[in-house]
Image 1 (cartoon, helix red, strand yellow):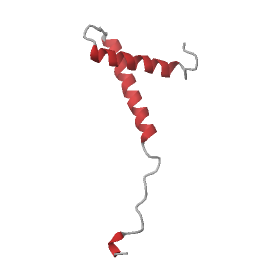
Image 2: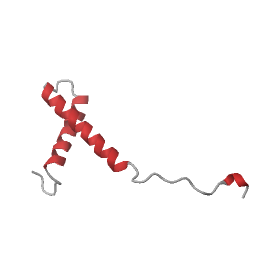
Image 3: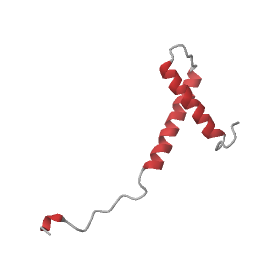
Length: 71
């Protein structure tokens, strides 16, 4: 395991992300159906985690001020 790594799961995600990138560029990289399913599930989990981290916690309330009054 790498020193200063954040844990087993993040390292697995990093490794699978590297495999995903390699699979898109290398034609001779073979993956079984099981491996493809694991990659699909990790990609989905990573996308959900990304969306959860980057969605606003609170939706902004509409402003009480309006420029329609000509101020």
